[in-house]
Length: 195
Image (cartoon, rainbow, N blue to C red; front, top):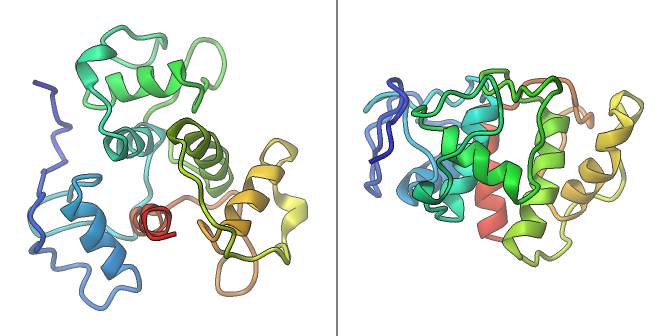
């Protein structure tokens, strides 16, 4: 039995009791990803939609989306990922299949907050691994802050926008260095499943 992070409460029922998602722009997506078991609340009443997501948490969500068997990924390649942590097998899986690599010096930085450009790169690789074929139904106009997107992330950001998986911020920017929130993750996963 995998160990859950202490702050994560599984809530796979179709209806949830979150008091912090009512009226939220991503409520439909949040309800969907929780009902599918991709995501859990921070408690029975709190989803934390505006809280940022860490690298370890995001990889775990992707693994749950593909129903990865955690028992197949017990060994660990990174010095800073303790076996027994809920995200440990998912990080091993994501590393083996090529979705993620470390941050250097044998580390993964599982508790570091994920940026929007890092997310785009991981999602591009995730879509290849998952074999999901998505229709292009997004924005091909680009973002007004494209020069701020790192060269290693530019193609991924463009591809995710083209597929309609991510959109920019309200002002037409992508905000590549901004943290990726739990609500934004929920919306991305919802967009993939409803492409």
